[in-house]
Image (cartoon, rainbow, N blue to C red; front, side):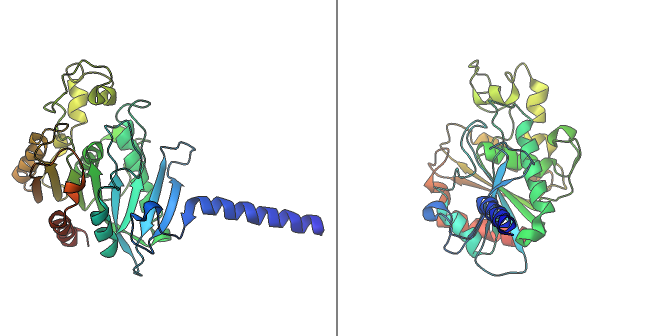
Length: 303
């Protein structure tokens, strides 16, 4: 009996340790999220052990029957950073999300240095599919889903949002389109057209675009077009809120202007905010006037 009791105690301890690695009911690191936010951390969304196949879910302290969801896709030229990236300078926006009752899911995806395109969008779609399939566990409303992305993450968010109503087989890890709908996209200075993106003619083998595509745009124009969000614009696309720095040296502002113009031409609701004198990223994008417009946009199309 003593041996059985000891065995059961051991099993219980192991179970608690495993659960602790995934779920944590404390305020997240660095006080980025408001006090009382529940964090479910390092959830493996692909059923493997890859560190780039993890996601975090943040649930507001406000008690509701269900929460609309915002999926956070980090930037980093498709080859750096992690699911905590971009949060440090967007604290006002994050607080507004939580205070207004939105759950936030932040996802990791494979870098272009180990897996070229379309691995990144496959991972993002797979992560969203996992959240939707397990939405009830976190009281998430699977019918109200928005994406937010920054730079490379903005590109991925736009690409997911615009291709979601089509079937691009290569964009899904198993070649099968999951059943989920994107209600809105928040695109912060993401590339929209690789054929016109500044720096796409660089002969540096370590150029971010070259690494993503597995070759220069000039050598892979068809793949560059396939990876460009504007390729998939049609009248049935979700509304877009686009934010761009006027002095962005990494993603030329014309990329966001082009995206907005083509969305408007297709009859898709969109808003474009050009932040005066702003560079590629930083606290200038977390200003109150932008955050208020974002929340109003989400309330119109998601909440």
